[in-house]
Length: 146
Image 1: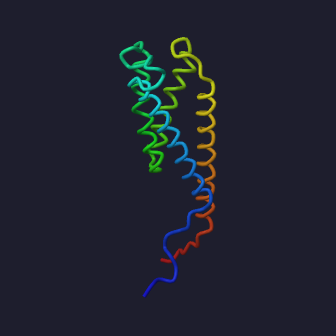
Image 2 (image 1 turned 180 degrees about the vertical axis):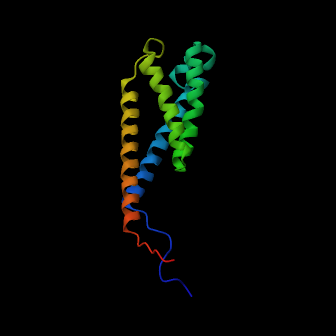
Image 3 (image 1 turned 90 degrees about the vertical axis):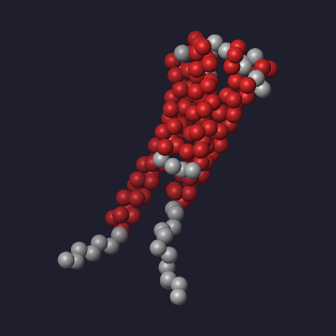
């Protein structure tokens, strides 16, 4: 005999959009990681930005981001709690590169704006999900039997 109703709650539209958002950011992070790897091995930029040809600050930053971005992509794709944390580390690294030390790494305002937009959207999604969870909790029937 089969049960009349499923015990698993249906995902809301906010949940579905949040997962889609995280996966789109995961694809972007994976792409950024691939760009750093292509730069380091000499595949892009005509081989002028190979690891052995870079200055020390670029070696540290690009090697770190080449590892952190794909890890963030994995965490975001799997929608695990550490994915956004690793993304914050990667975005913070790029923010430091292009925002704090533009005389070393150059200026890239587009990447700064995109990371800021992703952070704002992430915060908005978390607020919406929190409100939805709170609303569900208030609608549940409470039984206070001894």
